[in-house]
Amino acid sequence: MDLNKLKILFTEEEIQARIKDLAKEMNQFYNGEEVIAICVLKGAVMFMVDLAKHLKMPVDMEFIRLSSYGSGFTSTGK
Image (cartoon, rainbow, N blue to C red; front, side, top):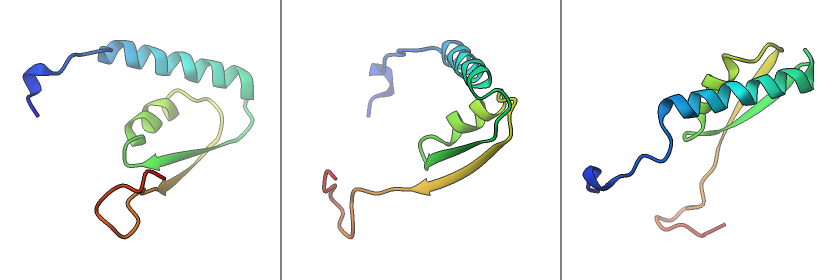
């Protein structure tokens, strides 16, 4: 992969601002009610952590690991 050919679609600041907006919406919607957040490992961990920092309700975090490879080395597409 040639890193020089990568194009930045969203800056870190834009992503963090949207995460804060999403947390604000969730805080208003759930109004202190406990939520269960399910995170798909490994790709969503950083998003989940950043979001949880801004939530004002009790959050129970659970993590799941998924694979479409089964027992092989090629994706089954499922």
